[in-house]
Every structure is written in C-alpha cells, then in structure tokens.
Length: 273
Image 1 (cartoon, rainbow, N blue to C red):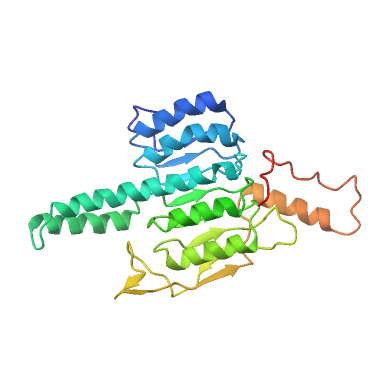
Image 2 (spheres, rainbow, N blue to C red):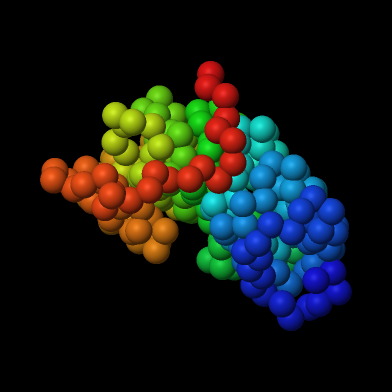
C-alpha cells in the first residue's frame, strides 16, 4: 500500500484492530495512487479510526472515503472534521504558492490558469465524497463537519444516513450547503431518533453555483436554494433491508414471532448532549 503506484481502490470490511489500522494509516500517508477507500461495515470503532486519521489527512490523492457502519461516535467528530480541513488547507496552500510565482500576463500565469481550470474539471485536489452513514453520530459531529466545510471547496456528496441526526443538525447542514461552492447532496434518511423524519438535502434546480468560491460575487454572498427531498429512495442494500424491516415491524397484525429483530447498534451509543 505504501509503495504501490497502481492501486486506486481499497475496501476493508472487517475490524482489524488498532494495531493493524495504525500500520494502514502510516501507509496511507505515503500512498500516491489511491482514489477511493472504504472501511464500510468494518465496525472498527473510534480507537481504530483514530489510528487512520493522520494517514487520511496526509494522503494527497484520495477523493472518496466510506466510513459507513464503522461504529463511530462523536468521539471521532473532531478527527472527521480535521480530515476535511487538512485536504482544504493543503490545496489552498498549493494554489497560494503557485500564485506567488506568477506575474499578471506572464506565461506562468497563463499556465496556472489552465491548471486551475483542469483541476476544477477533474474534481481532484480534495475529497469529493464522504460517507459516514450508519454510525452513532449526533449534532456534535455535524457541528465539527460544518465548521470544516466552511474551509472546503471540493466536497459534492455527504452521506450521514442512519445516524442520530435531528432537525437542528439538518438545518445546520442546509445552511452550509447554501454557502458551499459544490456540496450538492447531504443524505440524512433513516435516522435513529424516533419521531424525526429526514430525507436528502438537495439544491433547487437552477440555483447551482460552480467554481472555487463563487458564492462571493462583488462582495455579496450568494446563497444557493436548498430543499429536503422526502421522497428519495434508500439505495444501498443495508438501507433497503432496514427500511423493509421497519415497515414490517410497523405493520398491523404482525406477530411478535414474525417481527424483525431490533437493529443492533454498531457500538455503544454516544452520550446525548
């Protein structure tokens, strides 16, 4: 993993423990080829995730990270936010250094403009998709993620289905979407909180804004329009199974013997705040 230049995707679906995750984290920090990384359904917990964080911060090529079903709690919230900030900060620093070497009208300035256009078109240079679904995350982690997204300009999809997300947390994410240059979808369905119904936050068609920081035009902040799509289908196999189980459990006339077992939490629930 540390030396390969051809591996573009890596999926690890089992709990390898903190020791192995520490070794993987060190290798991730040096890897130059990986684009997509998934630990989905590994149930690794906060301790093992903590060993991966430095590697996820330092990897310069990765664009998609899937940490769904990893047993994460709000103890990992700050670390999750730090991954987004690290990618945003590194990209901003690289662009600043490039700009220092360019004078208006010079060949270097024209080359830089072409590179920036290519970078924007490719979507590279930072995380574009982050999946945190089916963990035990609450508004505490949402606040950490939102704070980091104020510095980010690349993320397009954020998935937080099956967590402990309430309406206040959804409102905070919606506000960030209005000001973020590319974030177009935040998935919040299947929340663990009873009495809370959430869907997918999406952009109102026609209100999309593109570019690195196009939300500031002539000194005026331009906000995109966002709405909650309550008709969005649960598309992953896990989500579809859970939706079917919940519907069966709620159906009248279903005997206790035929009711699906309650969802087993992936780790100890986070303490409420």
